[in-house]
Length: 87
Image (cartoon, rainbow, N blue to C red; front, side):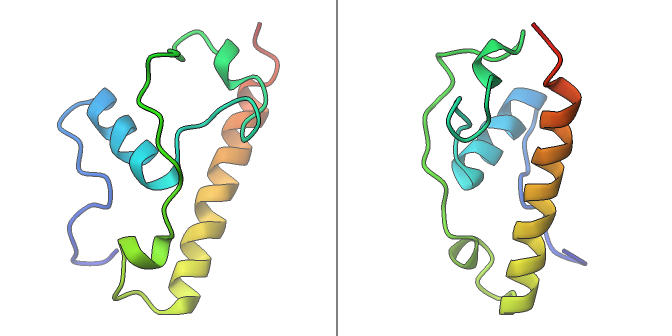
C-alpha cells in the first residue's frame, strides 16, 4: 500500500498478530489444518471472523482487493507448507 499507513500497525509481534487475526480471521484447524498443534499457538488467542477486505481498504479497486486476497492466501499456504511437518 504505497504511501499509506501499514495495514497491520502493531506495536509488538503479538499486537501485530492480533491485528492480522482481526482482519483475516483467527486461524483454526478447519481453516489451517494442525495450526493448534504449532508450538506458539495458544487457545486463548482472541477469536475473530474474517472481514471483507473491501471494507478494510475501501479505496482499493476490486483488482487490488483480489491481488491482496491472493497474496494473503499464498503467504498462508507457504507458511502452512513450512510448518506442516511439525509435531
